[in-house]
Image 1 (cartoon, helix red, strand yellow):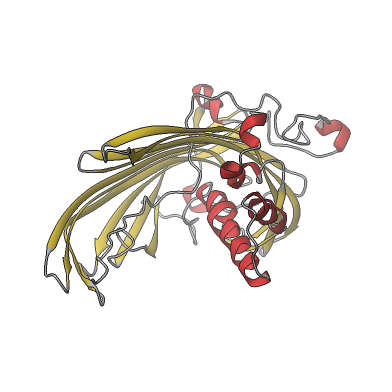
Image 2: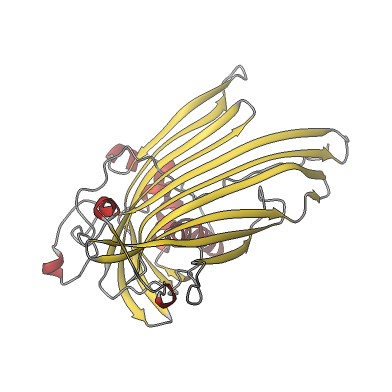
Length: 365
């Protein structure tokens, strides 16, 4: 019989997500050489750090600042030796009829700026310090009844670190990948990911060819390091001085449900500038609008039609005006679709409704 047309609706979210109940590393970035916590102070190492200068918790005492809007520029203008440590909290949900799943994780990572070519490229190391996961996953028991099971992981737990099925997380801990980016935060190149890939491959005792190993390495580079790095930034910095509307836009294509071609527009607005512990910080809000260009798709197996679909999302940002680094980002995305699939051979149709949502908080520690 012909294969059924598969409807796969991705979450439009990252591989790693987080729950905010866990206590993060007690040592600040720049004061901890590894996930195990060996220390060397910034003074001893000669490495400056933004830690202690400003953090996401300093908004309570912030004061509004009057500035000339047309004189403001936003870009990632960090300096060699700067150290940034972030905590990301993410809650993902997906439901289809009575079935659903949740994915909650916390992860911490540290970046050290190692090279800066003005107006060209910035090189940094990126190291995951800790990852905590708690997911609710649906499955069927021996009678066919739908049941839900909890999957938990904590990189601080030695027993969890020994489990092969968690090596995709464990292999990241303490390892420093090298990332080169533009002043707008876009990734140019990622290196030194091979050791992570080797650990994951070894845990599953897979015998892969050299080309297959390169594919695994590329997947980790793109779907872990690049993706998590990129979510820290604005989708786009303003490309010219702001006018009286204080707004700018980012346009990009991303298929709804991974199937239907769509045009997406993110509109950013600079709400105000505040002073946080002596630093001028931009408060920015963003809203997402999406337009589906094609609501019917076909292949050799069947046809899928978008009966209804909606994407809504928005975010709030605190961005340091001097260096352009993110202090705080709160992000929400919701995708609600109803599709009808028709099998070419049997002519049978199936209607599927699915809702997904993601809430993400990125905090400078």
